[in-house]
Amino acid sequence: MKKILPLLLFVLPIILTIAQKVEELPMLKKLNLKPIETIIDEQGRKIDKETGALRINRNEYFKSEAEDANEIAWSFLQTKQEVYGLSHNLNDIKIKRIVESPAGKYVYCRQYVNDIPVSATNFIIYINKKNIVTYTLNEFRNVAKYGDMESNPSITENTALTIANEYLSINGAIIDNPTELVYFESMDKGLELAWKINIASMDPMGDWQFFISAEDGNIIHVEDINISANGSGKIFNPNPLVSANVPYGYNNCYLHNNGATNSCLDGQLVQVTLQDLTYENGLYKLKGPYCVVQDMEPPNVPIPELSTPNFHYNRDQGEFGAVMCYYHIDLAARRILELGYNVDSLKYLRVDPHGREGQYNAFYIPSKNYITLGGGGKYVYLAEDADIIWHEYAHAIWYRFNPTQGTGSMPIRTETPSVKEGLADYWATSYKRSLYPNNWATYGLWGGMGDSTLIRQIDLDLVYPDNYQVDGVMRMYEHSNGQILSAALMKIWGDLGREITDKLFLEAHLIWGEHPDMRPAMCFYKPVKNDYF
Image (cartoon, rainbow, N blue to C red):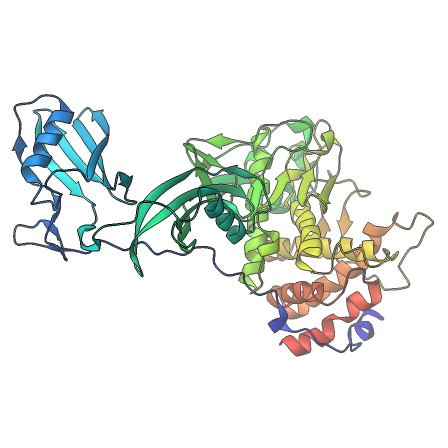
């Protein structure tokens, strides 16, 4: 450290502070559906606050001579139309579906105006096994107060679809975009003729539902109706050697052994929460706002999709690496949010836990914005080591967090790759040290299978430029040279703590430009600490 400390004291003019983080994009949601307000009457029934129409009756009793559910329902509606606020000729109601269950039959109706459906309207009639109506739910809207309604759209379906696409600024593939002409009752304008449009897109990810005015093209309402849920998974955290505090091969048990598991390795599995999983078509998927696990490269290993959100596997099962990737990439993104930074540019990051055709290497692919991890056979699958996942995620931070990256404005300098690798090792090690403050200094211990030529030490007393190596290939020593920077940052981590050093790590990306050399990259930390804190 004899030259590191003076180097860190070097002062650069700082024009970028915390205020210059990328600002949050506006929320895409615009919720504008008018709620139906109800009160409880003296009989304990829910009635409409505005009209007095019966909304929910749990003690309904209506017996019909008919046995067919459709006939029973129509007979009930004709008899009870005034109580429920229905039109006298029932021209505002259509039976859409009848579902039979062991308990009875459920008749589902929908409200119409001018033979056009009214959005968010249901009338449910429950008929028990004795053909008696005993329960009703009325979600029809008070449309009579609006008088005669326009039924011919001024805005075409294609125009409305264009408005929706432009609002989302879609980059990824559009999966589907069905449309329907409906009436929509909004909080601000009341009942309007509207185009209902559903767009399932990859970027921004979601199942977006729009209601766009068919009269003037105004976006009345938009929301993501995609269902997400938390699940659970079993992972290494960060890898079995660090959590057990043993070297590779210890007791002839902590070994790769061509991918086989054993009691030692299973004993290091921990159960964690998998946040914001996607629930789609009856299946839970490792797809969330910050990570999308996909099979993109050979070998083709299926990504698990389950009927329950419990992704519990051992490391000898191919699905294990997918769970590791989802948990750790999602956690890394939430760490950035936790520190007060925006991660819009890092959303929906794709990862292939079994890529590279099985080659023993891992990469972040900037042009396609995805992470791919190899290994297998005689080598550990690199997705089993969180060090490597966090390392590759740091490369995504480099390219996606810094607005200047990828512009091609300057040639790559010889020292920039070493800066990148040193920062990536720091990001991985910072997380690991927060878990194991006394057992953090070796990077990639499990992924490297204990091989000293494959793992790296992050606690060395290296000094720039004395220990910086240069060769004709220019990138042969980028990982070993990166240890100069990662070790210096971990020394700062020891003095200032994880919170401050991680913030400095992120803030630095905003000022470096596209291709920093080692010296200015390291010199940045002292002045930004003064401005920031």
